[in-house]
Length: 408
Ligand code: ARG
Image 1 (tube, protein in one colour):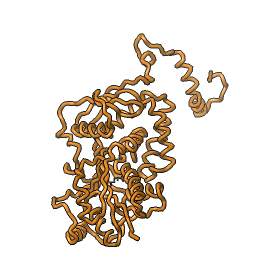
Image 2 (image 1 turned 90 degrees about the vertical axis):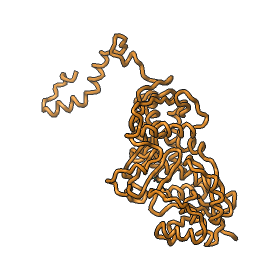
Image 3 (image 1 turned 30 degrees about the horizontal axis):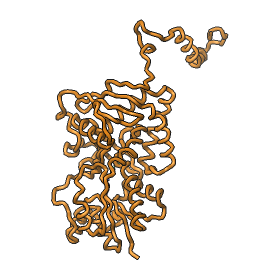
Image 4 (image 1 turned 60 degrees about the horizontal axis):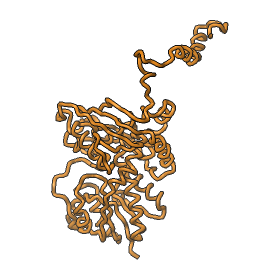
C-alpha cells in the first residue's frame, strides 16, 4: 500500500526539499498551501510543488476563516503572550493543522507532515492540533531528522534533484507572515543587543520616515467585531485587518521587539510587525473598559489575556479550555458596540475618543461642574467603611488601646 502524506507546504526551500525527501522514502506527497494573508503570489505553488515531486497540490484561501475564527477570538481576549506578542504565527498553525487533517481524511492519507524544526514552538502547535482532531494520524517532521546541516546542503540537494530554488538573494531572516502580523527571527536579530536593521521590516516604516502629520482613524465595533474604518463598512474582516495594517504601517505603528520564552525552554529574540492588530487591541481594550462594569472588567483583565495567550502559544487551541475562555469573552463582547478614535503619529497610537450605546460612563456623575449628581456626603461614609481595616491597622501600629469610640 502506498504511504500517502499531506504536507503543509509554503513553497520555500525547506518544504520543497521535504517533498522530494519524502518521495525518496516511498511516500506519495500531497501538498497543502493556505493563503492566510501572507501577501505572496500563490499561483505558481502547484507547479512548483509538482516539480519537486508532489502528486497533487492544494491551495486554499483561508483569509476570512483565519480572521473570524482565530484572530477575532484572540482580539476579544486581548491576548498578548508575555504581555507583548499578538500571537501571529501561533494562530495560523492550528488552522493549517485542521486542514491537513481534513485533507488527510479526504485523500485517505495516514500521515501529515510539516516543515518545523525541533527547537521551535510550531512543531508543538501542529502536532497537538492534529492529534486533538485525529489521534490516529502520524505526523512527520523531516527537518527534525534529516541529514542536512545547513541551508547550503539543502540547496545542493535541491539543485541535484532539479527542485526549483529561488535564485534571488534571500534575506538573512526567518520570516512567517499572515494577515495578523509578521514574525522575524534569525540573522543579526540573534544578538538581543543589536537593534533590528531597517531591512528586517516589511509593513512598517521607521519613525523617521513616518508622516510629519498625525492621522486619525475611527474603528467601529458591533458586538465585539470590528465592522468599519472611518465610516466605511467591511463585509470581510480579513480585508479590514489588512487595511489597518496599511494604515498603521504607514505611521510605523506595530513594531514589537522582545525576548520571549519558547515552549522548549529556550529564550529567543523575536521581532514582530502587527500594525492592524496593534490598532485593534488598543481600540477594543478602550471600548471594553467603557462598557463593562468595574467588577467584570477587572476580572477580565486579571484572568483572560495572559491565560488565553498561553493557551494559544502553547499549542492548546483545540482544547476545552480555549473553548470555555471563548465562551466567556464572547459573552462580554455582546456589549462591545461603538466607535473608538485613534491618533497615529510617529510610531505611536493613542486612543483619543470613544463612544458606545452601551457606555456606562455617566457625565452627570463624573462632572465637576454644577451638573454634578453625585452624592458627596455618601463619599465620606463610604471612605470611612472602606478605610476601616487600615484605620485599625494604624491604631494597632500606634499602640493606642482600643477604646472603641474612635472608630465611629
Ligand atoms: N516565536 C513566534 C511563535 O512561536 C514566531 C514563530 C515564527 N515561526 C517561524 N517559523 N518563523 O509564535
